[in-house]
Length: 97
Image (cartoon, rainbow, N blue to C red):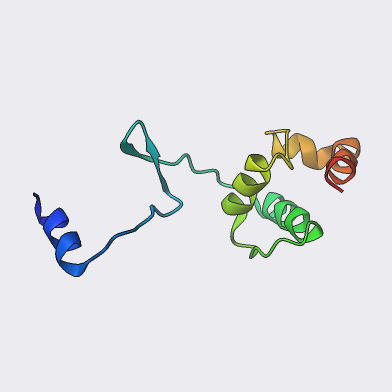
């Protein structure tokens, strides 16, 4: 046992999760790809999350984006294209309403 395992065993930690910057992949911990959203993109994602009644903060752009992608609210990965295309925006509301 290494020092970390001994510490975890002694303090009685039984369950833990990785923070949003890391993920498990093939039993290894990998760094999550980070996306730098512009202020406009962040506001757009936040407005979508609020429209669906989700409880996110404006600063949680990556969490919002991942949530919307995982739950198939956003099928288009290109945020800029989605923001510029009114029909694509309308389609989000219609498909998920």
